[in-house]
Image (tube, rainbow, N blue to C red):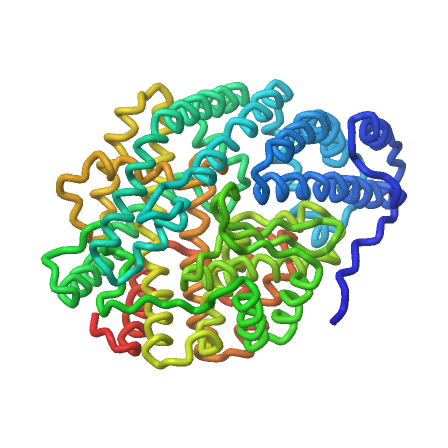
Length: 570
């Protein structure tokens, strides 16, 4: 087994560590004042700025990783210290560096094929930068971490055992319906307890975000974030049309599937605690320990492409995986790129479910993206937009479908795993649209109160309802958004999953027709990072950048046909 080769520094000594502002300030000032006398100087300046960004980014990454892995307050304090002292104080200098590049008379002499997309990114950043927003962003970052603390540390005494909320949610897949309902009510009961504090946290976040948007000259935070996220390839109106397309093309299909499941279970309709359960009473238990999950995942990835498995194995050997759920660990999962190390860190909360298999394969797709752009010297090109980053991960979930026999040796288990994954791609879309539409309303109605917010979420839940019967559960239904980490921590980072899900389905459709060609196109796409505009990246991957109603209809039909191959006539 090889080892991960850390990116070699060209402009800064290996001894340089951004531990405090006294160390960093001289370097950022030096770059701001550096003379650029030719196009060659300008190129070197871009690469030197990128190297400094990488050094600081990796130091920031490790502090975030420690904060999410370990419950001790010292890790959060160190993360917040680093963000406020180094990241925030560097921003005005980084802005001046970007402006120095964009306003350089030598900009016109840069190779546009190489630097064209960078210049567009820098221009957008320059237009949006306001120094007055920096302290607000620091405050927002600290406050948003409170959600993870509350959800991650929350436990419930359940049938004589202490359970985390994630462990309770996993019980919703069990065949015992009484157990499922009891777990669901225990979970929502804890959310009722947490709601007043979570509402307070969110109200403060909303006010901070609205203030940032208005300082930047926008009427609302939604429009500000659309531009801040560099969504050059689609508009706010396109996102709203996507909501409508899912409502018209996807919701009717998943409701049909829910009716089919209810009939198989002998129910008039599914209740919320029935949705994740298998109608045949089957619960997939693909692994027992973290090491088994890793080993089987390495084999699955290797079947798609040997290098993919080798990379995950390398991460294991390098201590770059933390997969098991435990008390105090933050919720969710992520792949965090380590800019200098040249590899990422994968974090998740495995509890032994089929969902965990999907999660590690999803995060492995992100990891392959990170590995594929290791040689890229421009840091902005390694910071891919979410619509591309999530295409890498969601496509990997589907590209590995043909190889799940590594985990499921029984035919019925394998069919269920395939069916769950395929139906999951479409069941996810109504929730994705609920989250995005909810945020559109929240930030275009910034003066709403908690009751109005809950009432609107209730209305949306019915609009995008996938077929569950929520009779007499109105109070609990209003709580469901509180578990969605992104709404608190990464506002408006969610519709990208929906866009990427369609791309992933299209890429998998290509894979079924020609595996080698599709994997080759997938790799070509990964290697580009963000060196090309988003719509071009999708074309390189061999798919359309589209989320129209007609496009959705074709993909729904494709999924229906594939589900039928697993034995369900839906």
